[in-house]
Image (tube, rainbow, N blue to C red; front, side, top):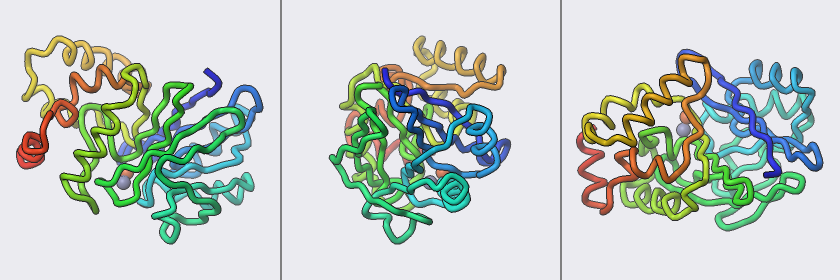
Length: 241
Ligand code: ZN
Ligand code: FE
């Protein structure tokens, strides 16, 4: 493990976005994933004495990019986003594409394109650190809505996630666990792994912590959208929401 990960709650109490402060331990170089609100991000960085050199975006939506310019100016940080989003991510300096590697100091990230929530949405995957930043593609027990992509595209994007190592921890773009609970439970009432997932998540949330991060292996056995084995099943699920 070469990466430290700090979760920062933004837009607390209404959108409950998560921004993340990533620090490469060896070099001390750091980055912010999806700065949706400047104040909590700057407060936490200053508290920890970090000056992020980069902003890493998963997709263009305002609740993931709205503080880009403020953070960029405050820290002189470079904004990195998908090539597809080059005209719609504020302050973008450098673009990345599917399959490309990108280095945060000595920590290696791989870019995985996941069309569905938006076209051109990307995941930031740090294979050596077993960390995956999923933006609005994968949440705890649910997935992001299809704003731009099709069910087919989302299904194949989720398959990319399912094919990553099961011990990878994922870090979503919002805290949606409690909202997603009833639907997941309704479909999967007698699943002991889900029962345990919920108990642990509720404990953590009550202590003011994020519900996650959760390992993909566990998520695959509890998240109804990852449990759908065929496109037909997946589409039926989308219609039942
Ligand atoms: Zn979004
Ligand atoms: Fe969002």
